[in-house]
Structure formats: structure tokens, C-alpha cells
Length: 560
RNA sequence: GUGCCCGUAGCUCAACCGGAUAGAGCACCAGCCUUCUAAGCUGGGGGUUGCUGGUUCGAUUCCAGUCGGGCACACCA
Picture 1: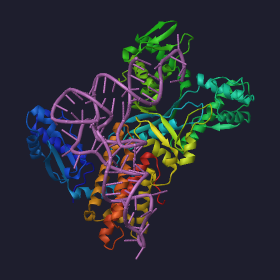
Picture 2: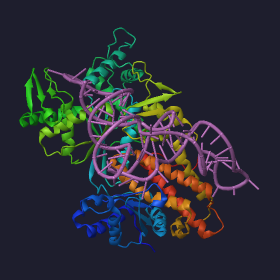
Picture 3: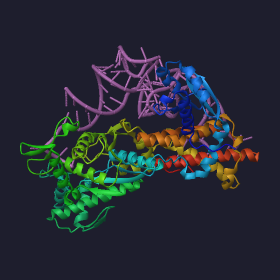
Picture 4: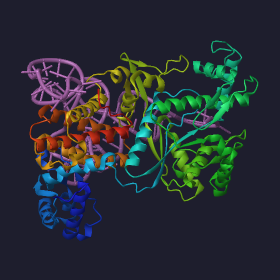
């Protein structure tokens, strides 16, 4: 019986670290030992380039160093053989038995397979969506919701203690504008009327808010509860109602999208709690501010900004970035030594300012804090044509539209399955198509196929973990085994790089491996031992699919 | 004009912080269902990784420049 090794990369890099300390003690701990998966199977299961890294400092040929490293490599039940290839790669071949053991590991760990302890239970605050309550969520918010939520799920799987946070402004100029728009609607003024303000909100949803207000409805959002008074002249009441109403709409959309938040933070609270004043006073005391043109400025250029920023306007009000700094100081004080802000790239200019403000406070906050994940803009394609975003014409695509039209699974997958840094074209027709063009179905179909086979087997599923996995020897089976082994490392990479799309790509490859296996082999065969071994393998495959799809917030149907 | 992101097959996208012959899907061509779901599989064609230099054993990846696309550049949020 081979001792179970759950993470081959970690295990092997430990072995190489020991070899390194023998061959070249002065470099031990200095060089990072990287094991990578070679693209070609002839190059083994894992390749190490340590010898080539050492060639220059040691002034010896890499192949000679490789020879020495191999000689110093401690024995392991995992290693079948080791070869030197190319310029000095050390290729490691893993024993079949060690690979086969993954089946038992998956079946034993179940939904927990793939989870790692990198985060060690540390707190991380992830802020995302953070849309102001001035209208329905659109595709861009949808991308933020999908990427942010998947990131949270990945971080949780990587051992972090995640708090999902939503921050919004309920009191600024935009909200005044919203209040005014609703009030006008209550009075019967329409956007077509010449009296309608230039920057008023024109969408039909404003009318919905106005009607609900006049009807004295009650609304319950995740973070607040308001009953309308119906008084047209009470602007404060209208504002409270409109904010609560639109927040509730957002909550409904987000819930339909499978996204829930732990904490809602209001900008207005930062003022009422005195946190804004406190930050201003601290910044003045820090000596990084100055007065000019009747305004108070913060010397953000000291901290890398390209120009200084106004904190207090000449009319006495604060610019938005002051509460932003106060908000982040508050996060820091709540114990979030790690914070990740997921935002649209159109807000990237705030990064430098917020960090600069925090540095100026001199409160022990590290320089690069907080982290940011910026997603690029989304364009929507319908009937092959780009749908222009125009709030005026009301022709912009809401998150709700997408969920209703293409479904939650496909929408989440499309929005999360791409690198956040690249612009995204959301093709509605493609996402809707129930065909082989749609990658979501490709993965879900693989899962449904496994379930179909297993349900036709009369045996006891709970006994599959006892199957004799040493019978899994075909190329298809070996490929699938290795893919299952990779899963924890995919979670590790996705968590480290803050790149949830890696999960989606992994799942496509896993599904492809399974589909090939399925077409080339039969599972419900005569030989009982072989049958059990194969069923155990595909049961483990389905388990990993479920685990991976869960990280994307996508369902794993048993029938399609 | 300044800053940030992106340029990879006809299209949509990958490429494990510098690795070996740059990979998938769609589309196109040719095959595979009396047997566990054909929303699947097998094979084929398709590339000077925008361009030019540089760094080194080795570059899609790092650096400089250049061209193209997107975003942001308020005493608005």
C-alpha cells in the first residue's frame, strides 16, 4: 500500500529542497523550487528546472548538477523514475500506484477534496459589486458579482476565512438626484417633459419606485426596512424609501444570481459615526495636508499619486475619497489584515488615492494594502450586434435580463470564466444556445453522464472506495487520474493569483478527459472488479466536477 | 497629452509568475450511435504570439520603443 500523498507538487518540492541542501547548501532556501507539469507525457509527470537555475552561480554544466541533485534525492514511494532531459530538466515520473490512490482520496474527502490550508483560517474581506442604489444592476455589476463571488468561494476552499462586503453610497449627489427624480414622478412629471432635469434618472424603474411610495408600500432589503409615508413633499422620506426599494431590487437580483453578502456598509454611516471627521483630523495632524484656494488638499504625490487631491472643497463638503479612506481604515480596524476590492476597471484611479490616504494616516497599514482585482468592461452581443448601453433609451442589459434569458448557470460561467483583465464580449445567443457551442453544458453533461451510469449500476455506491484501483491502467484512466490529482493545485493557483477563471478552464479539461474515456471504454462490464474500479474512478471524477462547479456557483445536474 | 489594462489560429479564449514541438472550443473537411445520455468522441487543415530592438542556456511571458483597441484622467461618486 502506498502512503497517501495528497499534493505531489509539495511532496516533490520538499524532496528537491533536501537534495538542494546537499548539493549546494549555500543556495538552500534561496532558490524557489518550482515543479511544473510538462506539456508532453514523455517528459514525465513533473519537471524541475533547479539544475538550470544553479548552472550559472555554480559555474557547472546544468546536466552535471542535475546528476548530483538526483543522486541526493531522498527515496520516495511516489517516484517511479527520474530522468535528465533537454538542457538540464529533471523529469519525474510518478508511480501508477500513487496516482491510483487519488480515487480513494477523492471519495473519502468528498466535497472537501481539493480544499487546502494556504489561508490557515486567516481573515480576508472581499468587497465587490458595491453598486449605488440608483438603479438596477447591469452586466458590468454582473461580472463583478460573478468574479467576486467565485473568488470568495475559491479563497474559502483555500482555507481563508472570507467576509463578503457590499459598500454603497446612500447620501451623496447621485442620491439627491435619484430622490428628485422619484419626487417628480410622484408629481406626474415624465422624462419627456421639458421640466425634467438634464441629469435626472429616466428609467421606467423610477416610476415603479414612485408608485410604490405613493401606495405606501413597505420594502425589506437585506440591510434595511422602510415603509413609505406617501408624502410627496417629504424629500427625506422619499430618499429613504427609494434607496431601500432599489437596494431590495439589487438583493433580489443578487440572490437569483446565487450571491449573498455578510456585511453592508453605508457611506452615510461614516459621517454619522464621526469616522470621516476622525480621518480628516488625523490627516491634518500627519502634516500631509495644506490649504490652497480655500480648499484642503492632501499631498498624495508623496505616496505616488500624479497630483495632489482635494479633501475638503471650498464649499466645505468633503470629496468622495475622504470617506473612502475612512471606510478602509475601518476595515483595517475590524481586523482585515487582508482586503480584496473587486471593481470595474473604470474605477482604477481610486486605487492610488485610497492607498495614498491610508499611508498618510501612518497607522501601520502596509503599503500595498488593500489588494485590488479589476475587471475590464463587458460588451453585450445580441443577434450579432452590440447592445449599446444607454440609460436614456433604457436599452441597457440588466443582470436580471441575463438571468431570465440565459439562466443563472450560463451567466455566471460566462462572466467568471475569463481572465478579469481582458475585455469580455457576452454573446447572449451563444450563452442561451443549448448546444455543443456552450461550454457550460459540456461540463454539466459530463457530470450527468456519470450519474446516469452510476444509477444503472445495482451495486452499493458506498462500497466504491474499496474498489481495486490498481486495475486502472489504460492511458485514458491515467490521464483522468492525473487530472484529479491536479485539482488542489488549481485551487491553490486560483487563490494565489486571484483568478477564478482557472477553475473554469480546469473543468473544461476534466470534462474533456472524461468524455474521451467515456467514448473509448465501457464501465458496466462483466468483470466485477474491473467494473468497480472504473465506477470508482468516474464517481471520483463527478465529485471533482461538483466541487469545481460549486466554486463557480454553477449547479451539477444529474440529468440533462 | 498622462496613467492603467489588453493585442496569441478566421472567431471566442488558454498557456501553471522565463521552459522542451504555443494549446482548447466554435467554424471548415472526413469518420463514429441495434451496447452505459451523439449537448459526446476520433482524425485533418489552420500561427513569424501586432511590430522592432534588448536581457540569457531559453521570451507569448521580463525591459525599452512603436502601432492598434479599451478605460480613467473634477473642488462628481
